[in-house]
Image (tube, rainbow, N blue to C red; front, side, top):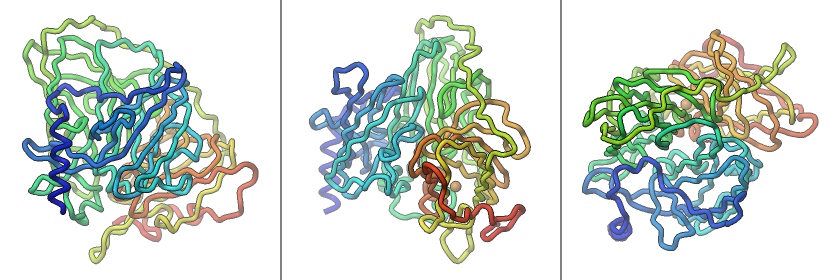
Length: 488
Ligand code: C2O
Ligand code: CU
Ligand code: CU
């Protein structure tokens, strides 16, 4: 039976154009609505197959453009593009063998369309759901399931969502790169077993993918300035990017442009995070430069497996416009006002990795789904203090709002900028300010998917008027090391 299914997938995959290697801007979904202010698309989740290793097709799941008859699902799925202010309508259909949802990571929307179980019923096999939101913020977002996410996203269900604006950033070329890795068994299929290391670190793959492939060859003219937008869609891998001989000029984070750019030689991207950079290619004609990920110590003494090449850029005889001046003031972001009366809420992240059982993860000593929801009243500002007591890093993600970083340990954050996912390094504390302007139930969780699904996830319920009298568990977790489930 299994063999038959695979054979069918091979046929589907063969008529696809898998020969383009410069697929650095994923194909976009077709807008079926002629109204210039509305983007209306059809997205279908389906089974598919991808050639991740030369000569072998790996059975995957992906999104396809449901408006094109017989279109093939791809990994990543087709990109959703909108302009700031557009109304986005998505007709979603599930052709997978199990229920799913679509979560619009980073998009501020009505809680009923956030794609988390509870806010909507899950979309059953052969079921449909219509999502609607206004693209309020410009930037790079992404969509993915929020159900069995460590399995469904690992299978390939993720795609970029770009909200464009006239932001004055001039470049020769813009590219979108979705970073991922997959763990393949010897026969080229997704690993069937989950080890306790997979659970502990988030499953790390043996094949690294940029937009679904590991062999991209880009041809770029000398001195061309490009805008590269990155999202890390991996279950657990951290990407620490370098382009040897070059620096990245970082212009944007999760919530769009920064006020001013800054330069860095390496760019760390934790699962769920997005970064936008400018690069100006430099090199002699014909030089071939790898984009690499290098080692980063994310805890648990994970061995250095880098540097590893993600794609290659060859300096080609193409004409660049010679854009030299980097942008200076890109945007003004008002800092969220806080004072000594602002409620400070503490969230303590911890793990239990006792030898005799699979690792489990906690927020304030509680393990999803057996958690006390966090109640807050609509319109208030809070300071969230995320203390990581584990000996590994956890990227903390909040739905429904962007926040502004205040400090990392005792270092004040130098930039006023918007994020929805922040890396909380091992044994450290990150503080951010957030305005709770959207009513409803919102999730917060570690974006290492195995951690979220194994307990490190919670519910924020933003209510109008007074909050119910529920004890907030973070209040009873004292400072210092240990705690009910302190790190080891
Ligand atoms: Cu990328 Cu809760 O999501
Ligand atoms: Cu999200
Ligand atoms: Cu985690």
